[in-house]
Length: 190
Figure (cartoon, rainbow, N blue to C red):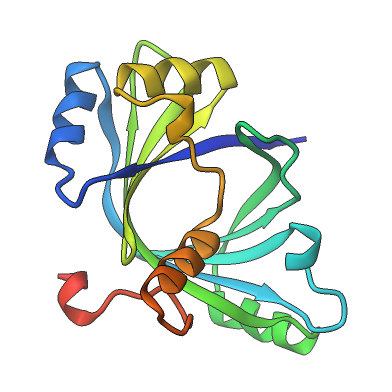
């Protein structure tokens, strides 16, 4: 079984400092900053969301990735079963989902940059710039996550295990906004 183990860390609006810190620690960009469009699908009869599961279509450039994630099995870290496969036709996949009763329930945008330290194979750092703020995702073994978070100046109190959908709901609640989709405005996309 493939498991994803991760945490998120909230960052300030200016991410240049964290980029410099990552370079000083030996991390290198392995995937350049890319725009991602994500769509979560669910059905009304037996909602995946209530089970802690999700099905997502992610578009990055000319690539489309279908992802299934199971319920989280940890408290300190988000640990969940994950399966991913590249698909060649996102539109056809969306039609299949609709024909079997799955419909888009939440869309979210982000820019992502991936970093890895060539001397370590235990994890990776993902810098996500979203409409509701900037975050680091640390994916790897719990030991690697804890050590890397400390090296970056974070403690366990800073760990976020909520999804971007959850963070978006908090953002809207704090500002008295009606939740829709977490999408960039045309100015933010630039």
